[in-house]
Length: 398
Ligand code: AMP
Image 1 (cartoon, rainbow, N blue to C red):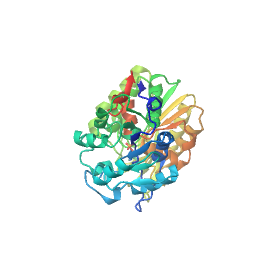
Image 2 (image 1 turned 120 degrees about the vertical axis):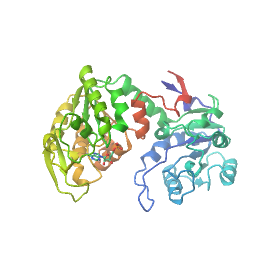
Image 3 (image 1 turned 60 degrees about the vertical axis):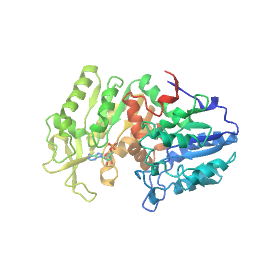
Image 4 (image 1 turned 90 degrees about the vertical axis):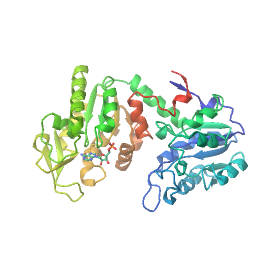
């Protein structure tokens, strides 16, 4: 898949609209706790600034649902951008209101304007044509560098592309890199190729699992989703997370794996707790012996050992979803052990999903991974084999 390329645009002295994904996590004092997404956008922004473009940046943050909500203001992002770009960043008070329009109009080459949170406008998530048109009218060129939101047909992601011809729009460097990486991973991975899939639910990852089956050699399941599989295998899982309506689908995944010769790994032991809390009483039990009323909140040490052995000979690892409730120290050890092992391996390691990216950063091994995707939902949809609505208008060759 080839995308419209930013390097082929005539950018000199132009007014450029860059859709970024600055949807970063913040603490209760509105301090940005992880600025990876902002840092990842800098290459495209600087490329435009080097060509004396007037740069208009736009992003969403959180879910203000069409209303102006102070805590979702992009002001902290403007501040961080100022440090990263080492130049002033003008923040508009609105998205397409008088202030934004005036500031965009007066913006000169080399200057940077950040619009307020796109989702302060109701039309953003509805892909409203009027809003797309207003956003498009601010600039001469449109660049999408927001991989994390490209699976959404929103006004600034999809609708807006219809107002620019192929000479006036393109993918940014980040979007291009994400699409290239996942394309290679799915279509021509170096084998053996293993997927580690965890997280809370089977439902969110079912399609991705089914789509991955014909492509991978091994699958390792962890996290809450493992219990739906274990229950289907006839184990008592106590109060562990389970999706009873998906037991049939779990069986289907296991049958398909068998049919395709994919080695399918499930936890053989878990850390069971008497409640979902950091101060819970916990113990290591085999998957066969989870006590009534207890819940599995992490994979156990035997599973870690088993997974390490299974992963020892693979050349490519795709990891999406934590192995346990890693937010609580007590249930983070399984994820942390696997993270260290994956980081130390000589294979190509790709981490997808916001939680997994957060996890590897907490463990301190993010620099050791080959690639960390900035988009959880978007990368899952790529793995499901879908063409993302924000990417489709930017494709020149299949
Ligand atoms: P997801 O968004 O589906 O990738 O799930 C990530 C979430 O799954 C994290 O917040 C984890 O705390 C949670 N999780 C992982 N393992 C378990 C488990 N065994 N029981 C409940 N939640 C879990």
